[in-house]
Image (cartoon, rainbow, N blue to C red; front, side, top):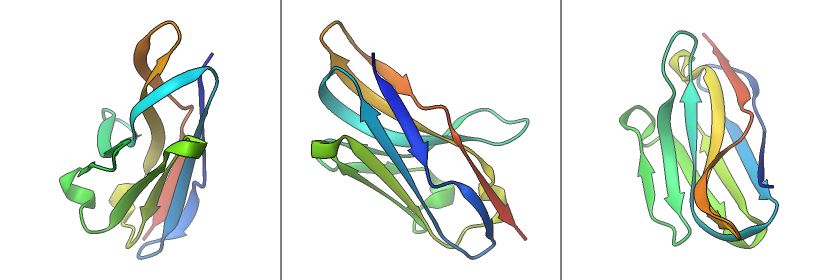
Length: 119
């Protein structure tokens, strides 16, 4: 059983910063990549940032230059440093991991953490 648990969401004023954390636990053999997605009310879930176990990153255009994703594979954690936050960044942020267990390789998701940016 694999679990992803996010933390660090909250309410912040525009221009502020937040740092999200996510830890993966369970019978994990190998992590290929981890990342963050978000879903705003009435919108589809969208990619925010991903990072491979080797450190290769990918960012959505709206967050480039403001958000930084990092990974610590030894502790199975991924982080999202969010700076210069805007009201349009308000969403539920979900942690994602592409990993292997003994039985299969697949995508796993956390339960989400709310980020609210006030203007």
